Image (tube, rainbow, N blue to C red):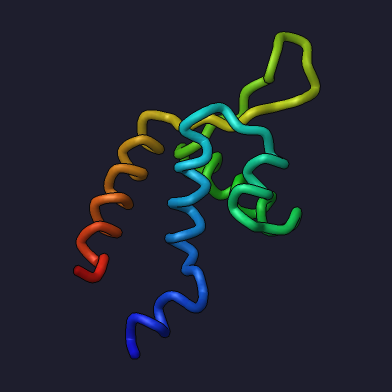
Length: 93
């Protein structure tokens, strides 16, 4: 019963973990939004949080471009690895 309750709604940590996973490769905001099943407002809020906390960086896709990609920082890589380890510990056998 507890396992079912935990899988019905994604936690903030799970969403952040998914965003970090997607951003291992440089990702556009729309790709993150679709891959993580978020709406525009949600993806804006999460990306702002993750950039402000130093887990992601926003980088011009090409010099002079108005399009940006999001990529993991070193801290982002560390957090993603910690998230994966934590998720593995919680997985049911």
